[in-house]
Length: 243
Image (cartoon, rainbow, N blue to C red):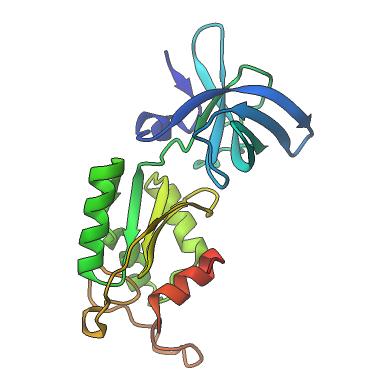
């Protein structure tokens, strides 16, 4: 069985996908389709894709979705046509969603990058999530490198989105002082939080997050922005729009 379309690599490297099917098409318009699925593991904020299985057993990916509501085991998803996913040059595959179409929730959910203010918190958080939830982490240097090259010590949502697409990541994990927040890469919504109580010593902090490169400094002609992030928790919670 082949999976057709530009999302082939994403499915091939799927670590945490939850497979289910469309149980109801609520509304279907040109730009957006609302569907329901019966899946207890669905979480509001989680991303998903909709796949059509052809008579030949080939599969095509046509929609990317967000879980926007959950009542008991019934989840509501807003879906839009994929428009090429990662490669704009590839042909667009279009179909109208119908009941029993295949849905994969969080297709790359276990492949993640971890950001933490110190090396110690990075190691502790990584160990917990690897052992207890089966996460596989790429190096935080993959985000630090383009920031260093562009003299940008303030990573923003756009940088995160580009990184997620480039490295086929499903999640961004933030090691905050009082909790660990797991964020879906595609929706940029927090899908899970784990309580912790880390002690942070000022001398151990690496800005804008723990990495192994040289210090990331702002551009020499940038006179109007601060030199660096003052507080890890405040800055990244601001990007996520959470408290």
